[in-house]
Length: 535
Image (cartoon, rainbow, N blue to C red; front, side, top):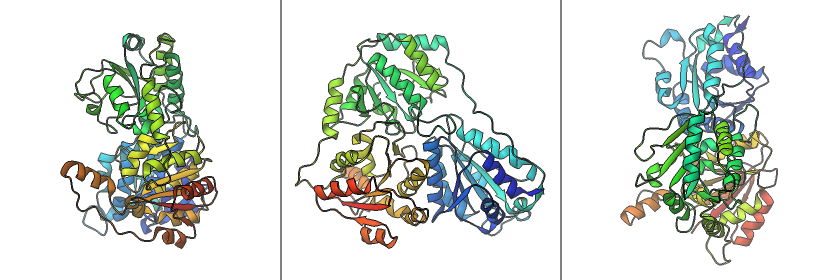
């Protein structure tokens, strides 16, 4: 006999869970002590939102569901932003929330909310573990659905009286992931014919083009590997969404970086000029297709695990709904090699010249000019994780990326506050160096997770762009109204803030100093914060 809480933890162990991120609560007492006696590391965080972001990024980088834990009431509501971020960014995550005893849930009681109903719109599936007999099945289902394409979030609510009950149930075996069928040959033939006949074909690489698939596959992406084979065979240009960065190497002459790259929007102009778009793993939640298909004149071929969303500006001529790597392999075999479709390599050259241009010594600090220096300090396999704000736009558009899952951008929910906790999760998930880029606004939302990272002995770099403003909102207000309001901030001394956590703090004053600092801290095994004051 074991307690139901012990059974839950045994199920998590069977699923291969290494870390559970969360905040303890009295309703979770049995679960916490079961975790203590397990092989799973429980990571107490400073905020439930930080815990959910950690699980989100862990899931995105490993392909295995990250797990976050909170108590009932405010713990559960605090968890929701990070869970919703995983849901819209298609990151596998399982959230577990405590709940009061069932004897008081039929009436108004302390901290009791209908958490299952609250989570319903932001997860693929959720349920209450209302009886010991349902725990093993529910945990297996939560992980299966969270990790199955398209991945996302699942939620389990665990009442404290159920957690204390004894049971003879055991975990379910974990089987191989469900794999979608190979693509329909007729659809492949139609798509290949459309793409071959096009005069200006282009590939749009989305989030699904870089996601890792197999359990334990790390950051490798079979979809990316297959896409690279197709592009090399055809010589066709590729433009990525922000979350599709690294689907092909930006060193390749076919790469146009992302949809908004180039000093004058050259990548956007190229995809608008294209007469056939092969959209691979494209997510409408990430980037509105009206931006690149405004006149409804572009022929679209949709390749994804699910049918296309119904949308006036995204109405594909052909939909290949199947396993993405298998679909790309079939298309590569069906399309003739050496068709000479590289019709905009000059765009690649202009974009690369722009994003790699280093600043002049007297140029004021800017995000855009920091990026070539940062890129030079990072190896190809190092991971850059971007928070949300004006710096995210610069990173998405101007940071060359050479490998899949090495530039992590939140762009579905696009929630501020992800980078510091996300950097922690990235440092746990991979051996590469990690840089967490953030603005001053997003940093102070979850900056306390520096203590969590320090406690775990982690070493990654926080690159903090400080403009004392919610800068992206100011920019948009200026564009619309030629003025801005409600965006100014007053910040603490960020170097002193970092040093109060016993980590290095740097505030370079010149470009040479910034380059020296980044070359020192990025490959270091110690944690550091580098503040770049924007003018």
